[in-house]
Length: 448
Image 1 (spheres, rainbow, N blue to C red):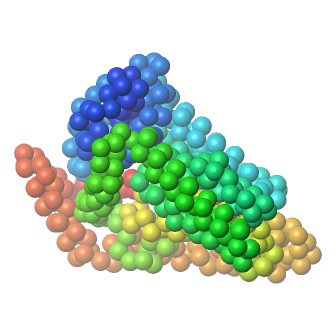
Image 2: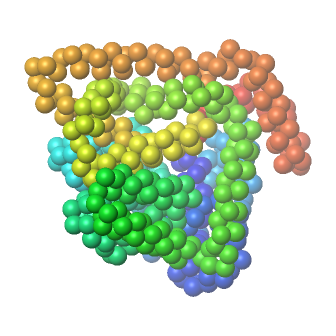
Image 3: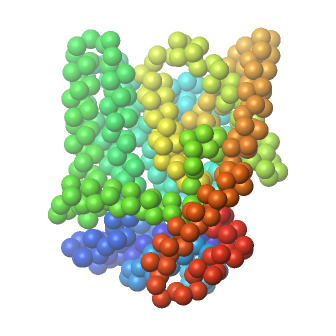
């Protein structure tokens, strides 16, 4: 069991607070847990657990989790303690919900690929997403990432349909506008990063309406305004923390997230990227490379096909200017760039929003190879060469190699980590000696 799974199960308390006690004015809506994440995923896990009476009854366990999870040197032991606290059925039900969300994400990607390109491309992209190691790992964990991915793909699909209708008819639709905005509101209600859905929507509308007649551009502008209003309304409606002071509490959530990331960079320094090249290399490696069994084959195939898709982008861009394809490209490329920007610490779950683009690129690469038939050997050779060159480059830029080459920097960061832990836990006199043991250093450098 992952530490974050326990955190989400403890946060299922908010479901009881909202839907069982109907207490929307409780101080708990201003608690540190409410600042840490919006409540939509907490509601989902609470709904799954409440039927068996397994939802958390208070925030006491989450408060202990907040305090204890910052101690990095004996996380395996703490994980075993959490496993004893959480009933196996609660963990199973929460993971079941996460897996269902991931299945929904795969369905949305299939429909999106079919709408923008072809049914074969959509089916291939969804299959590759199912087979991806990262997808299968997170689908089996009780965390919010599967729900977030399903919603972001749902946003992309709704906006692709919306823009296609808008360009074809030139008419404004309040229903489609409200639906697209409402999905962005739900995305923000799952993670505050979901606010990026708004600029992606504006870009989608701008690209789809560019060069169109004036009535189409006006309808697009009006639709974007309605969608923005709907997004704000739904985001506030699904989060009681925003009922009184939505703007100030939202700002506090972003400040809390930035402060949390800065603290994590101190506590988990061994997993924090030191250069942009490291970040890009590990981002690429985790998306396309694997070391275990069948995953090695499927990941390698995805890497080669994605390289073929990347090399074919100029041709595809000239051939596909249909609004649904434009919206799909904007959304999936946008979320991949956002995932890369947020990937400051080497925690694989942050890469999940980039997986749909990787899988769609691979599906497009496969379709291009099939279309070229006898002439496909040149593209295939270039794709294999690109993937083969990327693999050793990504591995050579690993964090492990960096710290081996910079032992003084490692010790300096370790001293900073120790100082932070001692200041946070003055009662734990055993922290500095334990953290200086070699086994503790190994524990500190484990990937979360």
